[in-house]
Amino acid sequence: MNKYLQLSIEDTPQYKAANKGITTLTNVELLSMIINRGAGTKDSINQARQLLNMCDNNLAQLSKLNTYDMQVVEGIGDCKALAILAAIELGKRRAIEKVDRAKINSADAIYNYMHPIMQDLQHEEAWVLLLNQNFSLLKAVRLSQGGLSETAVDVRMALKEAIMNNATVIALTHNHPSGNTLPSRPDDTLTTTFRRACDAMRIYLLDHVIITDGAFYSYRESGKL
Image (cartoon, rainbow, N blue to C red):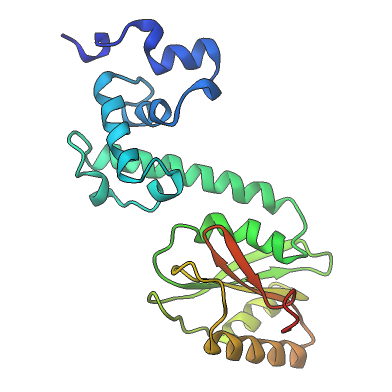
């Protein structure tokens, strides 16, 4: 039997989406449509359910899987795994675009912009946000990426980017894949180095924000900047 006929028309995700709205679909049904190029079948629904079970039905955990992780599910190959990752990436970019239109003038705004970028990383990355005097984003620059415990950041590179882009305000941010938002001694040292360098160049250091998947630490809000 053709696998597209294994479900009654009314029970297929594509029928529900077309007639009741895409928001009425469950996570399993949405994922099954991604897996099977817009047409959910019993096979793709079962595959979607297995993938979500691997992640305790947590979409944030699903986004942390790579193509090899997904392929433990029978029937999921490179193309289907990449399609899922592509859909997740589109969601992240939509979130970034939404924040990109707003002013980045607080720790909350920094977190909202960087969280989609950093939430699924398994290693540390350091970024600098270059802003104008109105706190509008000029450019986001990744300064470095490292292991799970540390990352080396070149302060000179950050200031060079700021000068080249006529930024008068910068915000430093990096992630803690461990989930612990508390700063380490190297984090404190880096913040002090950045603050002194910015003061010398008459650039305002808005904040240094440490990001985890769901929380953040702000040096400015903590009175340490």
